Image 1 (cartoon, rainbow, N blue to C red):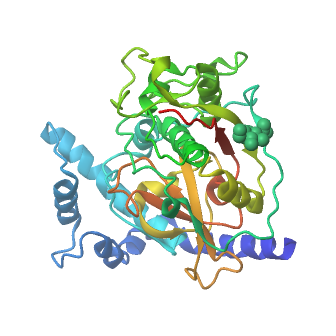
Image 2: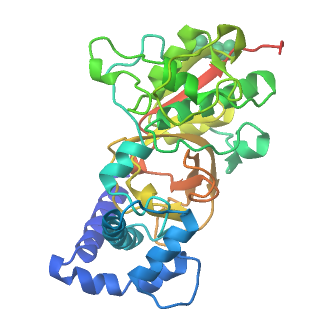
Length: 370
Ligand SMILES: *[C@@H]1O[C@H](CO)[C@@H](O)[C@H](O)[C@H]1NC(C)=O
């Protein structure tokens, strides 16, 4: 274990040294990556310059800008994101990085408008510690999408509400396991009505598009009595409305929720037994992710995004890796046109991007009515 870790550190530092030569050489490095960028922009064989990429980007994602000034600014941001994508490609060779719908956003805009995970030091008072489960007989591959526990991919839009989608995803799965019925549940109820936090930590409150936390949202859901259906309380993508929660229309209720230990086998066992899990992650590589298994040599564990763990798989994707041939399958909330039809794959084995650090499992109340 220790030998593996030190080998990994050695390899990472070597690769880092290779990936970040003197800043002045950066331009050379980038021009070598032109072919790489081309392969991820529609495969059209046309002149391969930044203007061309930007035209394709605008067409593909229906982007238009109000003024020429704005257009030129977005073009400059786009160019720097192309360079970021090729840096990500070097640091994360088992995934494909390139143009996504977020390529005209600065990293700060991206974090502010499309993520939304808050931090809270203490757990909510009703959170349990998950029981330690047996792990001997876990299947090598498992995917809740194949068992009907995962609702279609949704889109949080321009709103830092990731936490509400992670929470509804976990509740949708738990409700499916408790009742056999898949109901799409309301994020807007959480965005409008949930202001749960640690009273000693005012900054930690769930705050609509301003961010929130899945454990707090589960605490809210437990106290409020449950969640309404998506169709009864539809998503608006903003937090300017008032709370329209109608308790008589609750369709799924929390029985209890628990935090899972950092152990990957325990995470897998809880996933298989209890349904999809709410997890937090560092999303920096997700801004440029196009497909494949993301397994960056180095990735911050600073958690800034809430997503849903729905399964795990195995397969040879990175021959130089040692034990890390398996990956988590993650449902995101950026629509179906991001990543692999809205999903992300990230390698297992070393808490990469912090994916194992904040994992919650929820049990729903078993109901037969409705
Ligand atoms: C949580 O609820 C489920 C379903 O009602 C139950 O089986 C389980 O024992 C509960 N867990 C805890 C820790 O109370």
